[in-house]
Length: 394
Image (cartoon, rainbow, N blue to C red; front, side):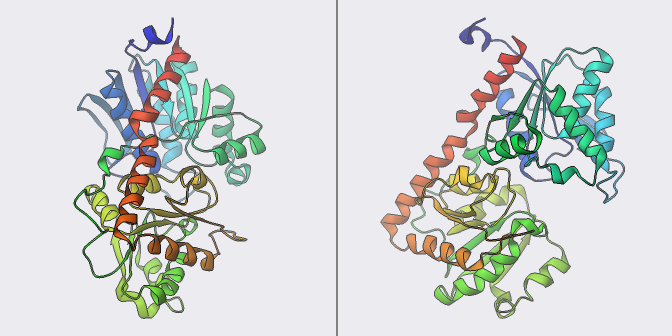
């Protein structure tokens, strides 16, 4: 069957992940949602499988969702709700005549592989490692390592998000993988055509979007850099949008030089999903000083909104920030759990803020950012996922 003819065939596609929006809002959950919507719009029958506070079966906007009640809510890597999901998912997969099951973690990939053998099912398994696969991660959790190795051995194809993830999978597990970046619903994040400046607020806005409590994300070095940026841009403010708890907030504003600026550091918590586009649009810059980032979804969302970015030259971020027209990359320094090059981060933020002083230059930057983000749109990347599925089932 040639490409033109088989692309007209309707597939039954299952997409699995332990968690889903709106209960959890991270990159994998966004990928689950965006892939499901894209394939539904292409006319395929889409089933999603994830955990939620209660069991539920729903069929909204043409996507069938099987939600499995989350259990074993223990803060332990050795035994947690993801392991429960790997067991509970198996009986759900046999209910539907699926052609492809696209798994976003090794937990559900193991479940799909096990269910296929146990129940004599005939679907193909796509294992997309949405993190960065390193052997050391599994050292203290033998059960996770077992799941991961089974996924690598028996999945019909392995997919990663970036060149760095591909390199690490080959280095630590001697397995090849195909790179497919996460398709992003960029039309949800568009520039404001009436805006000549990022916002009408009195000073420059610096945005961090992510889990503030996760040390590797780099909120701490960003707060330190912000103290230095304020010397050049005294009216600047820092917005930290994402999961935050009181101890982390207290720690961040207690750093030397940061405490006097506490009124200029705004913690928005997670907030509502529909607030994100506005946050990106009204900001002058989005900063993601994270290490071990598999992709960098927030950077694409920011660029789609016309807002330039600063990221760390590590993980999947260099795959996105490919030109100084889009922002800057910062060397992380000799880091352990988080980037340590605060001086470099400070310089990068100042450079990007300076880029936008001229209205004409800002307009060009906004257009360059948007054009680049469209390379990661569902329209641009979705067909590659669809072609992959057809190549497996035909």
